[in-house]
Each structure stands twice: as C-alpha cells, then as structure tokens.
Image 1: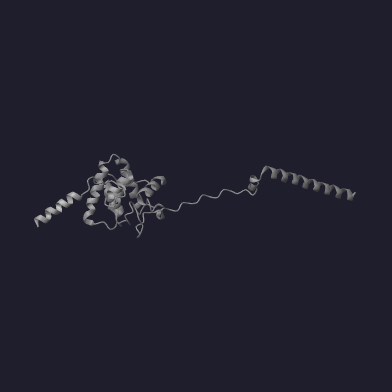
Image 2: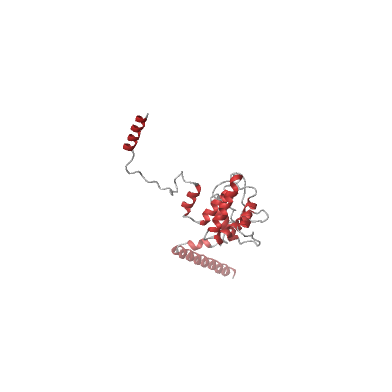
Length: 220
C-alpha cells in the first residue's frame, strides 16, 4: 500500500501545472463568491449598496430567527463604523417612514408573494417596520416626525426598496397634451405653396368683388 501511495504522489507531482492560473476571488461573476462579496464588488464598495444588502437580510420574511439578531448586529456595527454614517441613518429613517402603515404615501413597500425588494431577496417580513425602528433605536436615533419631500421618498424607494422591480413603482401621471391650434398645420407649408395659396385667395376675393359690382349695375 505504501508503495502504491508513493507512486501516486510521484505521478501527481509530475503532472501538476507548472504555472497554475490565478483566479480573482473578487470577480463579480464568480458563482462561488458570497452574495455580500458580489454586492460590494459590483457597487465599488458603495456604503449605500452595502446597507441595502444588510437590510434585505434583516427584513426577509423567511429569515432564520436564530441568525436574525446576528444580522441586525452586523448592520448596526456597519452603520456606526461607516464614514457615511449620517447619510445611512437618514436613509434608514426614510425607509422606516415608507414601511410604516400609518404614513400614507404612493410609494408602497408591498409584501405580497413575488414582490422583490432591496437586493431582490424576496417579500418583506410582516414586522419589517418594527425591525427598522429597532435598528434606529440601537443607533440612538428616532423615527421621522414630519413628512419628507416627495423627492426624498422617491429616491430612497427606488434605490433601496424596489431597485429592480419596477412593477412596484407608482404610475406617474402623464403630462397633459399641449393645446392644439386648428391653424398649426399651416406652419409646415412650404413658402412657395403658401405664396400660391395667398394668390389664389386674392383672386377669389377679386372675383367676389366683381360679382357684386355686376349685381349692382343690373339693379340700376
């Protein structure tokens, strides 16, 4: 048996590649990489993108309860240690505002089956508003008391809550049609044709005046 093993080792050493190809572990298309690594690589380490990834795990409806607190701890530590802490905290407050049912907006974070959110993880957990509020409290922050602007809500909703599932985006009102002018088609007539039309109109008016003069002459 020892002789066979020695022969096998010798064969492996003689046939192994002399210059093995190095694999880039940060390749965004590497299926062996974790979702977190792919997310960071594709976003260029954008902290907002990382926050979206953490929130998707914290609010996923099928998250493992035993692992849930660890996920929240990682999210809180990430925000506290980030150079963009103020911006991230502001975004979390806006996300909570959108998820809280008592706040009526046109940007609805649905939790129906198939409603992909955040990092396309899946439907929201039913207690997602409470989860986000708990994260804010652990950061030493509180929820928003005044209604944010529509621009703020739209930006956060389309980046965090429904970045790819545009079927969840509210239907934008179509702009009103511009008032029509019944003579607007005349603006596209070539100058030569317009001159000919003016001449024909002058000739018609001259015929009308001539006809009136003849009628007056007959009456006399």
